[in-house]
Image (cartoon, rainbow, N blue to C red; front, side):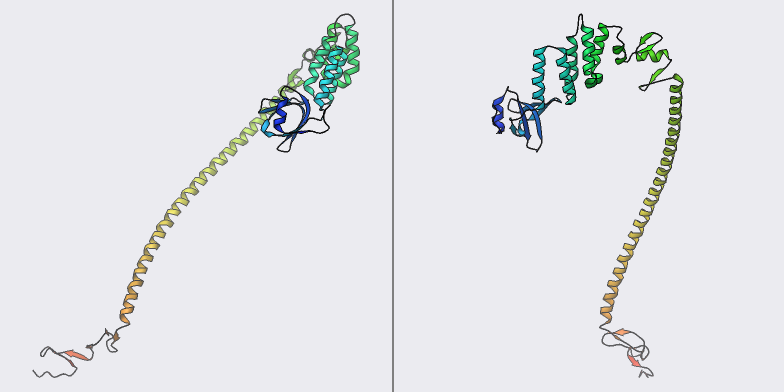
Length: 312
């Protein structure tokens, strides 16, 4: 008997290699997988569930709880019981249980196994009895049983109708044969008259033409917009070049103004140390001979106030 609650570290799980138990595999990510866990080597753990096998990396497993009965374990027990009985009813019941528990991968194999036991005298009656018992639980999954019933009793109306046959003009016809007799054709999973099919195709072709025209118009509009954008880009590049040229001129003018300002500053500093003649407006530092007040005598070579009489 299993202990009430056991949490196995990963290294302890590996000692059960080759052994399958009903477990809850807790993952380090916080998730969990419920089923029959079978460690494979030291790097992998395979967990079988009703839906199928899930392969997990051993490094992703946090712990395993072995005190648990998983649905897959229940199925395996029912499967073993059905194998011992070797009766079709047990396998169909097992298929119905699997369908009810969303284990669809087990439905068809069990139905096929059940059908394999139905043969010989009395087989048709047995197949009909089983169909009555499991038709609601298995629905369309019971097709192999109806096919076997039809093989054993070609006149079975129940089997014909369940397999989709139609009685037409005293003959049983498949759906394809019946639709063909009505002049219908199959178009995109639906039976219809050729005229309706042609109308649908015509409408679609018209719709395609309209959509194609709309796409062409959209393409032309896009082309015009692309051209306009190209022109705008060209204008932007031209304006950018003009701005760059103007900026260069402004920078050059700024340099000239800067030079003028420096020159004016030097002149201002010089002028601050000079005197100005109120008569002629000339700047001078020490002495100044004003042309308005002094005159040069060509005879004696000196400068004298006005009204000078040269002795020579």
